[in-house]
Structure formats: C-alpha cells, structure tokens
Image (cartoon, rainbow, N blue to C red; front, side, top):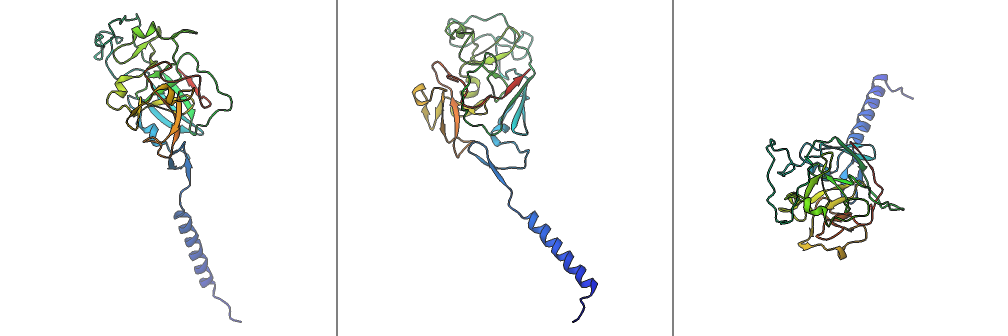
Length: 257
C-alpha cells in the first residue's frame, strides 16, 4: 500500500478549510419579522420605520428594545416659543376661542424604550398621564385626557396652530392630530406609542378613518407602507379619543426624562 506524502495531505486539509469558510460566507442571512416587515437581522439592525425620525431624534436597537432619544421640542413655529426664538409665531390658526396658556416650550431629555417586536398584551393596560409615545419629530404624544377624569373640551382651546401646547414644565406635546406632520401626508407614519405599535395619520388607502373603523384601543391590523405584510397600528381621527382609546394594545415600554 502506497503512503500519501505529507505535503499532499496538508494540501487536502487547506482546501477543505477554504471550502468550509466559503460556505459560511455565502450562507443566506437570517431574517426576523418585525411586526409584519421582513428585514435582514444582524442583531443590531434598526427597522426602516425608525429611520424616519427627524429633528435631532435618534433611534437605535438595544436587545429587544428600540431606544429613542429626543429633545421633545417641535421643529415648527408656535406662540409657545419664547419671543426671542426664531420659531416664535403668534397664533394664526382657525380656533376663534384660542386662549394661550402661560407656559413656554423647553427642551426635554426623553429616552423611550419600546419593544422591537411588539405583540398584543394578554392584559391591556391604561395609558398614563404624560408621554405615552413619541412623534417622528421628537414630540411627546399624550392621551385624550387633560387631567384625571377630564376630557379636552376646554383644554383644546389652548392648542396652537399645529395642535400642540406645553405643560407647566415646558414639555410640548400633542393630544390630537399634529397637523404639521399630517397636512401633506394624511396616510404617513406619525410616530410610535410606548407599546411599539405605530401611529398613522387620519387616512388609509385614500379613505378617511373614523372611530367605527377601529377597535376600542383605536387601532386595527392592515398593511402600511413601512409594514407591507401588515401590522397592528393606531390611527388618528377627528373625534375623541383622537389617537389612542382604552389603553395600550401591546405591552408598554418605558419613558424617562
């Protein structure tokens, strides 16, 4: 029986290792479904919808969460800016009953941690007072109440020409449709609530959404531009509860400031 030269054996081993490495390099990347949109997952890749944030608002993946940092100030004009601010503008909206509150917009230091892969909660929770979500321009979303047990019937008269106003600590926020974001795109992504589900404008497929089109949490499941395979999402409507109904559809993350 002939002996195989040592040099030839080494050559076979080298070829085998190179072939295995090539197979690994050519392997198809794993994919993960982020609420209806298939994206390539590298463990840290940000879903496309979160790349729409503007106005010094940033989003990144941290484990099972998307972390959004925002200054919480609008990138549009308002009578609630200090008068020496370039964005100050006297009220010029259509509400003849407008009455400006005494507060002035101030920069915040928001950190939102919301689920990367949101899912329906077994036990639904009510939304708290304060920020329950964030818009793509970094402004806080509040629920449909002005104060515990109250509605917005009086407070709505303090909303500026873009339907927002600040708290006594200067936290600017929207309770209802942020027209600065929706006027030119009624079907566009407006933001996300703390449970990770997106909020869309008042239209879908050319139709104006009304409350009866939605469930008690003020959302439904359908395909959107950012989630073509479908996802549960909230819609803004003209009537109470405006953005969110009887609580979060999913399990809420956290917000600190």
